[in-house]
Length: 161
Image 1 (tube, rainbow, N blue to C red):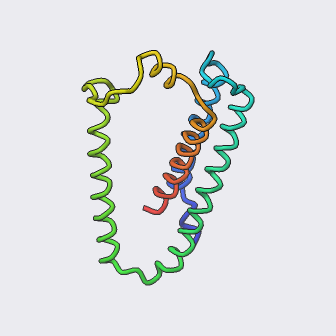
Image 2: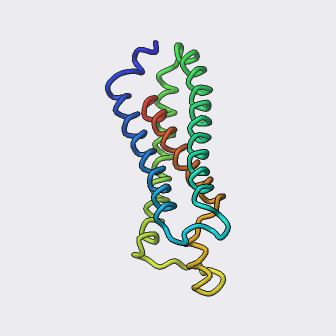
């Protein structure tokens, strides 16, 4: 039953996502180590690096627990799985993926600066630049946990397809 999970395709997917996760962690560490005045006032580099490591470990552990909590019941219940139900689930997931791609295609031109945004930011330009240029422990925690969670979840999503 579990032998089909350890084939070359699954190992390749795991290696790719593991590499992406390490790149994300490495990018945050590089920004913290080389960025002059990138951290919020009062946050030390040591504390920021510790937050990156701790957040990555927490995200990985939680994602693996969620994957196990989903995979075990699915493997037990999928023995009598109807093919029609599978086609309905696959169709619904393609609709959701299409909506996500639509949202991404609408936001990407604004992100790249092709189209201007109609949203106005509060405060003058120096306040906006300062708030965007500093990293808080909270923002580090959220961004690292979100990105590592996403990478670990992509492994499970690719493996169960």
